[in-house]
Length: 76
Image (tube, rainbow, N blue to C red; front, side, top):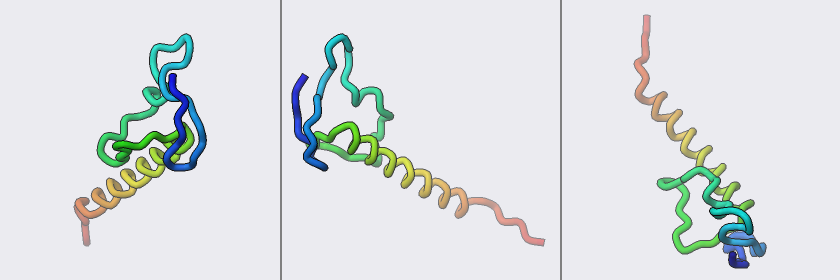
């Protein structure tokens, strides 16, 4: 396990599997492949969770708008 500094908030955090575990904390979070780009960044659990929450909210808003724009409108 490594001690790293978060690129977003400056907090120090542990990166890697904790003693007695076979995987890192970040592997327990949802995969945000498309909308949450952290290439080359190391972020703490709090910033990761906050960033993912924002990305999920943004995705949901975009999907809602897409559904509204593609729904059939019935007029009488």
